[in-house]
Length: 150
Image 1 (tube, rainbow, N blue to C red):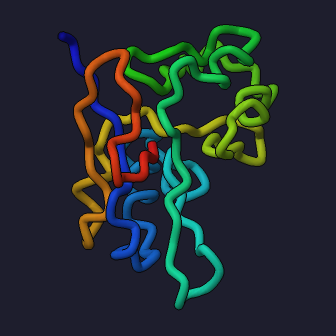
Image 2: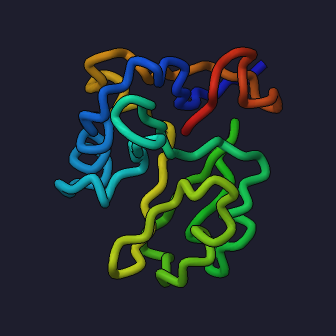
């Protein structure tokens, strides 16, 4: 059976909100240096004492963002999530509007940024909050007891 890897966030209770994952994504994946241009974002869940949440793609299958994209810039990735062809994107924002968990971020120019489940951010998390999980194609993305991020 074929498998695909997706990004998960099983240990967010360890997160200190350093944004290392976001900056790694922005720098290594999107070749930019701003957490506004990353496929994963860390947000406070109400304050420093209440911890942080990772906002990233849940690897939906079918992906609502891909279904909403009018140009085919977003397409379904095997195993969940999406592949993005930036040259086809017309920056309409339909993908972000369709995402059920607000995991697609639009830059001020409406350029979309979404997790592509490459896992480059995982090594940069100093508290090991993120993991790549291998999934059988066609399997549900969420493993028991683990939050799936993206």
